[in-house]
Image (cartoon, rainbow, N blue to C red; front, side, top):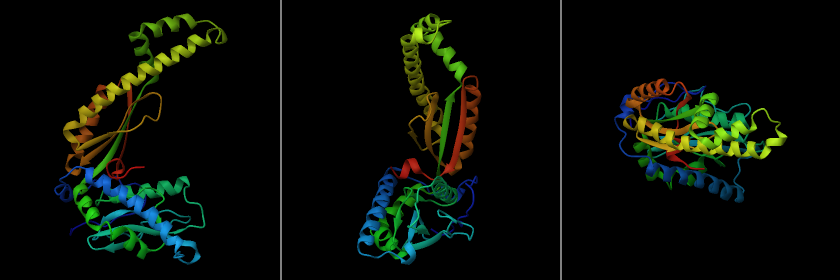
Length: 304
């Protein structure tokens, strides 16, 4: 796969994947999802097996694995990953594929917030330039040789196929949240029980109306959940013409209107952004939007 650009480091990239890569994307993320899961399982199991054989590198230094990329990818000197201080990201190759790796001191706890951020920023920066199969945070093997022997060699053909399928695609996440006053006004206008409960507790002490307040909260929650389900479907339908796939995420807030990951072809990114602008204007009086991405295909390649 000649012609891949180098992978830069630093903060999450805002550039788009190249049109050349987009022209090669063909299949859905189904196969890649299975392959990504295999990578996660293999990395963790292999680490356990090699450690049992006493194969750990000196000074408690092991090999952190971020993801799988085509073999012709190069990293830049400023590409860094997890660790304190952050360690330089390197490439280990096998056949048509390679793994993004860095040294990691396994004697120190791995799992701090900045490590997770570094993991995601590295993958997201790579994903806007080259196809990448992200591994779950915390995948560690003992040595680069172990990465080749335990991860790249047994899954070479699967990973190579998956990389071809996702080339020219990135992920975006759309988060929509109901504005508080408009959503409460709508619930009270649409549900008679909510209005009756609101009128009953008005101007009365909280202790004297606790059952009614609890019930009102339940009614509002149920109403928002119903609206969320309907609006999520509306949002997905709105983006159907400019996206390759969608994955509904769990809400992160009680007033979430939608939380959806989209798989987007590089040459459809302008259409995607235009569609989002239209939706923002259409829902401006009651919904606030937030767009995350472009990022690696976390929702369409790996699980867990």
